[in-house]
Length: 585
Image (cartoon, rainbow, N blue to C red; front, side, top):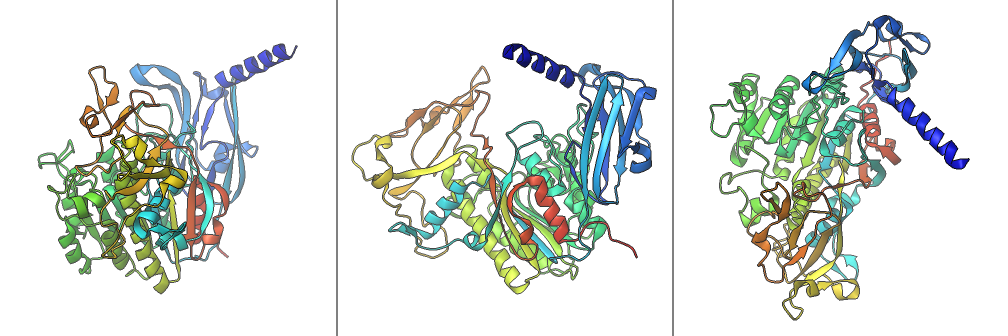
């Protein structure tokens, strides 16, 4: 009997799912009062318009939403496959806070969703907001950075990082709307819009159509700031400025790889300070290094709009002394080099781009420039290479970039000390499956590097030094060093050593387009083959689903607490800046 009931329940569930209509924004969406968003209903079958009924809080939807949705008789997917009918309305605004229950019926299909529309106070809590995000930031990164930078003896750290004095206030859930796993696009999009979305999507709800630009849009934080205030906006990243994290501050696309178009969206919003990589998407196609497929010259367009251009550290220093109020700094055609390569090893692409600024210089210039606006500012600072080096399991590069990120936090803390009306948020967009399990001690006897791994009491303490007191280890290839290890990855050779000749490439593609261990590391003395545990289509480690830690200090920081979804973080940010609907007497 129990089996029969279970089977009937499963059949009922599947039948219901087959007839389920999809409504965007999704159920439990949280929407800022006055913030524009697109409304869409996707039917699973072809329906007649006269059979469609949509109500909002038991009223005809047009009365509440303020416009009639366009009816699409046959929405088509790839190869013109008919997916069903649809209705869509663009740019809706709900000015009144409260619960909105949307009921949709059409023939045998039905769907009910409820949205929470919220408002903010009318008085801002902080004049300035500095949002510091380390891509892929995990607990192991911060622990390793503290030990590598400050040292440890007798079980206690010999110093503190800047981030150690920013109170941890919340755990943040990072999952996407289509998967428990996640990427930088949907995670940062949730932070910057207040709406969760699907993997690879930015500033939209991911619908079923193949066009990556027709998905239902939601307002980004930069757009809300432009709509409601006269604050300045800054974006700083060591990645391409069109990469997922910086893009999410302004952009709308189902496909994070639409970088040429994202560059146009940056220009549409015109953040006052833009510093990072990605010049390839600013340059017209005829220019060497360009990745555009048109003749648009965004360097010229930004300059014509009043921006001072900087292409290296020297030019950035010059631009910082100008009074234009707007700076475009693009220091690499792609992602900028890691701190370890840029400042110490001179590997990667440093030979081609020898005078790149670091995150500290860029953050300093951004704050100096943005703070000239008496109305205040929002600044997003991303340490991108923590993630970009964690993917290929290059832990030394990831940790040294974490130290640089901490130094940028120090710059923000110094600014806030002089400007107490500043909220500082420190967090990650997602984590990696990495832990510190002990040390590797070259002075242990033998040639088997695996036997040189120290765990428990045999780990001892690493012997990094910082003789010049710059906060970075004098070298990473000390005789007893931290041993970080991932819980996932492709087939690869573990060398137990820092990769001094350039960033690690753990796996390469074979003739069957499967990723296999890179034989270039096979003959490194003591190297050990490690069998991968992810599909062979993967060339590197993947993101973890673990919660990220959010730290915050300053006015408005009390809004972060306990467990929060990433979309909830947006609600605190807009409340801190009072971006909701202003009440009229």
